[in-house]
Amino acid sequence: MILSCQNISKSFGTKEVIKDASFHIEALEKAALIGINGAGKSTFLKIIMQQMSADSGEVVLAKGATMGYLAQHQDIPGERSIYEEVLDAKRDLIEMEQKIRSLEQQMKSASGEELENLMNTYTRLNHAFELENGYAYQSEVTGVLKGLGFEESEFSKLVSTLSGGQKTRVALGKLLLTKPDIILLDEPTNHLDMDSITWLETYLMNYDGAVLIVSHDRYFLDKVVSKVIEIDNGKVISFEGNYRAYSEKKSMLRQAAIHAYMNQQQEIKHQEQVITKLKSFNREKSIRRAESREKMLDKIEVLEKPTEVRADMRIALEPRIISGNDVLQVEHLAKSFGQQILFTDLNFEIRRGERVAIIGNNGTGKTTILKILNQVLQPDHGEFTLGSKVQIGYYDQEHHVLHMDKTIFEEISDTYPGLSNTEIRNVLAAFLFTGDEVFKQIKTLSGGERGRISLAKLMLSEANFLILDEPTNHLDIVSKEILEEALNSYSGTVLYVSHDRYFINQTATRILDLTNQQLVNYIGNYDYYLEKKDTLTNAYAPFAEAESASAATLESETKLDWKAQKQEQAKQRKRENDLQKCEAEIEKLETRDSEIDEEMSQPEVATDVERCIVLSKEKAEITERLEELYASWEELSL
Image (tube, rainbow, N blue to C red; front, top):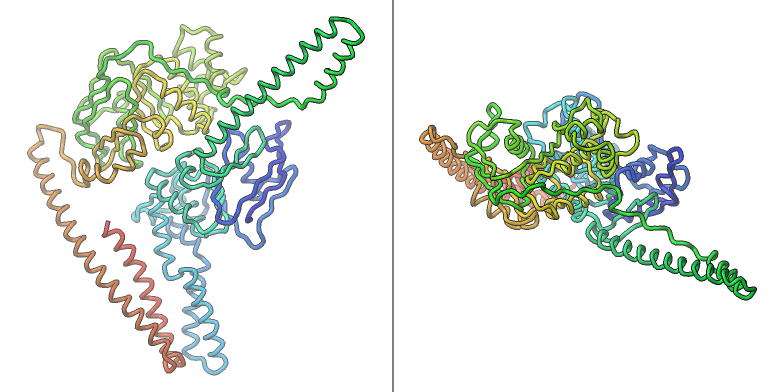
C-alpha cells in the first residue's frame, strides 16, 4: 500500500464536505476519484498534498515514497522555453551526466589510490545513469511533449506567453517525467485533444507507479483505472473495476437501497396503522399490545432515503414542429484564415432524426463549421441549405448566445417574453438556479453555470435541429448522463462538436471526422470510428493538398493537386530511402556496441584507464544515437 487516507473529515462553515472518509491506493494501482461538481474531489487531493488541512483523520504515505500533483490551473513563473521547463524534470540526470564528464577529465591526470577512488565513483555513477535511462532523457522529453500535442516548432516558445491550457500541458509533461511513486491528477484531459488523450491513456496504463485521477472523462477512466472511489454526499465508497463496472454496480446498489427503503417505509406505515387501530379499541389488553409494538418500532434503525440521482437537473427537449426528412445539405464548403486553410470542398447532408458528431484535432475547423451554419461566419466558398420547416437551436461553447450584462432571469424573460415569472423560475430551478441566484449577472457566472443557462434557453426554444458546440464542457458526470438521455429521447435532429468520447459513444448515430481538410463519414458510434479510422482515412482523406471547390479555378487547382500528388510520391520515396539508411545505421551501431562490450571485458583493456574512458564515451554516444534512430525508425515505418 502506497497511500492510505484514514477517517478524513472536512467542513466549510456549516457544510460538511467530507465525512469520516477512508480509502487506500496500492503500489502500481490506477484509481479514479469521482463525484458531482462540489462533492469535494479537488479538496480531497489538496488534503492529500497537505495544501489544506483536514478537520480530522490522517493521510499516510508509504515510507520513502514520492508524490506528484497536477492541479486544474497552472501558473508557471520564469522565462524558460517549453522545452527548458520540461527538461528541468531531468535535473538530477543532467547533473549526474555533468559529474560523469568531470570525473572523466579528472581520471586523465590521476593515479594510484586517487585514480582507483575516481574509477569506483565513475563506475557507480555510470551504472546509475544507465539504470535511469540517462542516455535517452532528451528523447524522452521530446516524446512526452509531442504526445501532449506540442509541435517541435513550439518547443522554443516562452512559457510566460502560453495560455492557461498550454501551461497545464507543460506542467503535466514535467510531472510525468519526474516519475513520482504516485501521481495525483486533477482533470488532466481538460486541455488535450483526442490524440493527446489517447497518448496519455497509454502512458498512464504503462506507468510504473500509482495514479489517482479526478476526471469527468468517462471513456478515459474506462481505459485507465481499475478502481473507482466515489464521494457521494460526503461519504466515500470504493468500487473495483473501471468506470463502466462502477456505473453498473452503483445502479444495482441504488435499486437495492431504494427497494429496502420502500419496504421498510411500507412496514413502518403498516405498524403505525395497527398501533392506531389497537389504541382505538381502548381496552387494557389492546393498549398494552399497541405499546409493545411502539417499543419495537422505536428500536428499528430507519434507513436513510437514497438521494435522487436525477434530481439535480431536468432537461426535456422536444421540437414544437416536425421538420422535413432532409434537414441540412452542405455543398463545396471552404474556409481559410489568412494562409491557414481549415477545409476545402466539404460536402455532407443530415436527415431528420440523426445525431451526428463532428470530431477532429484542435484547430481543424470543427467550431468554424457550426458558426457558418449559424451564420456567425461566412464561408469562402460553397453554400448550405436547410430543409423544410427546420428551426435551429444553437449551443455555443463560448456562450456568445448569452448577454453578459443581463441577469439570469432577464436572459430568459427577454428571449421568451410570453413566459410568466413562475414559469421562468420553474425552468431555472430545473437547472439549479433558485431564490436570489436568478438575479446574478451572466458575466459573474462560472463556465458550468453559463452552460446550464444556455441549455435552459435551448430547452425553451422548441427547435427541431440542435447545433451544439462542446455541450458537455464544465458538466459533471451526472449532468452529462442527464443530457445524454435527453438527446437520445429527442425526436428532432442533432449536430454537435465534442471531445467527450463517452458522450459520443452514447449519443452519436453517425460521426464526421474532420481530418486533412476533409470530412470522413462513419456510420456508427465512437467505438466503430476507432475500428475503421485508419482504413477510411487512407481511402477518403489521405494527407495531400485538397481540391478547390470553385469551378472558376478548377483547372489551376487540378494542376496544384497533381503537383501535390507528385510531391507526396517524392516524399514517400524519400521516406523509404531514409528508412533503409536508418536501418543500416542501426545495424552498424548495434554491432559496434557489442564489439565495445567484448573489448571492455578483456583483462588488458579493463586495467587501461584511458582506453576504458574512450570506449565508455563511445558507448554512451552510440546509446544516445541509437535512441534517436529508434524514434526516427518508428516514425518512418508508419
